[in-house]
Amino acid sequence: MMDLLIVAGIVVIGASLIIVAVRQMNQSRAISERLDQYTDISLSLEELELQQPFRERVLVPLFRSLLNTLGRFGLKQNQERLRINLQLAGNPGNISPNMFIGLRMALAIVLFVVIGLLVFGRLPFMQALMGALIAGMIGYILPGIWLDRKIKERKKNILKALPDALDLLCISVEAGLAFDLALQRVAQKWDNELSREFQRVLQDIRLGRTRREALRDLVTRTGVEDVQTFVSAVIQADQLGVSMSKILRIQSDQLRVRRRQRAEEAAQKAPVKMLIPMVFLIFPALFVVILGPAVPRIMQALGVMNSGMGN
Image 1: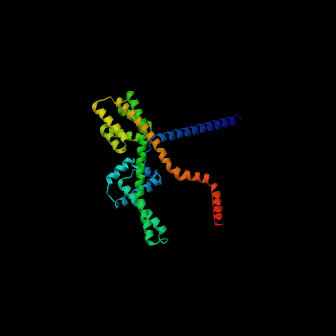
Image 2: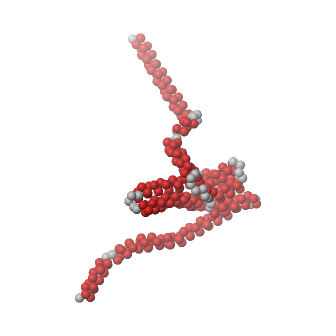
Image 3: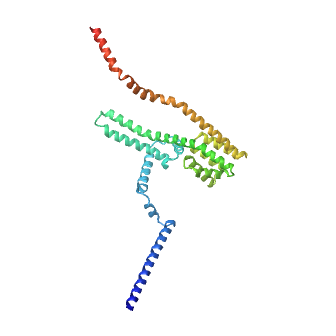
């Protein structure tokens, strides 16, 4: 009996030790996994590249290389103007002027081939060729239209966000912050086109450029008249030693007045813009609803009158 108790005690103690050891191992494994999440793991360049999706590793570089190759055979005129337009649009997709020219040529070739395959054999040769050429011209023009829309949309977003950003900038400067710190606070407050431009201005200043040069580059990248007025006032106040808070307060008041004037102008244009859909869409439907039931009676009356005159 005594031997059985000793064996049972040894078994219980051994099982307890095994359970404690397993729990400690699981706990240490969980701690190590949690630490691995917050520690940098040294990976090779190949491993880092393989972590990216297939689209980023293969498709996007292949597409950009193809556009660059096509852009070499395109027109090289006004490339500087194209670079400025891409900058005004916010560099969508980080495409270069050469890639944009390649995009135009690629779209023109694709539309020419597709429309040509659809119409050749169904129409006379000259008509089919003319249709394919027109499709190619449309494909060449479409990227330019898209770029113009991106520029207008970006300018509109910057113009919309500027008054509120300037109000916060003025309040921050009046509260005692320096201009650069107030600009950083405005850049951290929102995530839009204007805040990203302010972040780039701060980055240029950190890299050693003067505030005047960084702000002038801001005007070049945005192309908005109100931004140019704001930058000119800030540069002038910095040169003459005028109080920055007073200048910002004046600029803020002026921008609010301009925003109200633009809203009133848009309200005045609304009736003129509504005239075309009313004349061509709403009025015909009203005429059909109002005069529709009377048309059979009018036709019947005219028929009776014609028959009476014939008799």
